[in-house]
Image 1 (tube, rainbow, N blue to C red):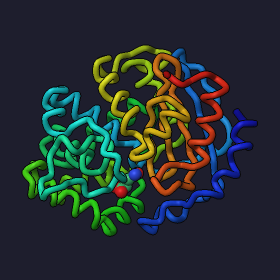
Image 2 (image 1 turned 90 degrees about the horizontal axis):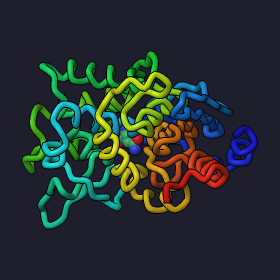
Image 3 (image 1 turned 180 degrees about the vertical axis):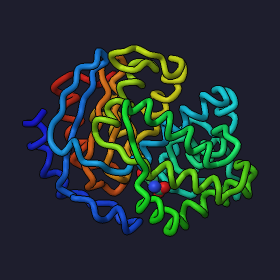
Length: 300
Ligand code: GLN
């Protein structure tokens, strides 16, 4: 893994660290780390895998899981569809002046904002705390929230506000828009490292059970729901190419993280903050491609 990682590190030169909010532009473009957790609990790692970064869109499958656990699949599906949009993650995705729930999915911003509104709780703070607790259990350890990134997301979040108000005006979002958005911004600012992402991936690969202890966190049917959407929509409008090059369900985030799920075999956490134009880690995808070829990880 160390050899593959060093071979892939120069690919970061083709990418750019996210700068849509000032806080994220401070990332080291050369960083690259990987952590792997097998379904029996075996661990391996290489590179900058101890660096802490914000989860960003890798929280989307966890938002979906919490919404599924609170409401069931039928209700969630009635509120947000499952088809790939083929558009960037923050696209304003409607035509003919009509925004339809079938045109969005939980892995793009609009769908994830709706997921925040579906989580149960008396207040939005309680909803976020429940999400944070689920993230902790899935990540297998303590995690915090990056307050500077949260403030930056909130004060530079005009595009996400536009998306949320569009949802609201089309009757697709219940609740107070600013409160729902606050939950979304906090969710994006949860701090993780490669190990945490690998652990979350391992639970999804293990059909809802923790690696090693086998304790069940969510029903197997929910891992099928989440993994299927990760396969078709997890890398946004780069999902098709990722399916060809790597061939496993995965989710990327603009913090540089990728969580990959190799069903029944392993979870993989990647950190590489230099992103391609679609917002996915360049060196991270290259590393997953090489690892997939060597270990025959593609599910196809
Ligand atoms: N915080 C980012 C946003 O909402 C998350 C997007 C991402 O990671 N692709 O725009």
